[in-house]
Length: 113
Image 1 (cartoon, one colour):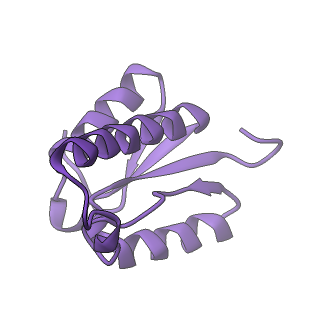
Image 2 (cartoon, one colour):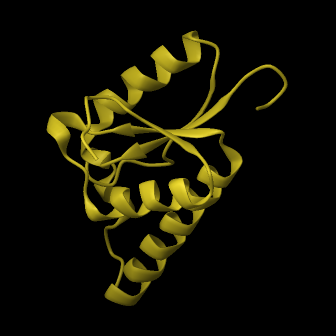
């Protein structure tokens, strides 16, 4: 909580850029501070990865994963963008991390644990 505003970190596959943007707007208008991804590597930001050798690519992905977990640490809850029920391995890891750190987990679409 930042003052009276709950903090929510968005999680999910970056292939769902439009849904991330919609959720960010909706949750913001509901009175939340929303933390999102910094880039959409699977949906429009491919130039980020161009000309990276495999080692640099791996280190960059590891950095982005660690940064996202830090964003989860700053939040009261996470909101999973699970279009069509899709939850990939990175997002599963983020959900597990959030649960282990006592964060509430909400989903865009119905989810059965």
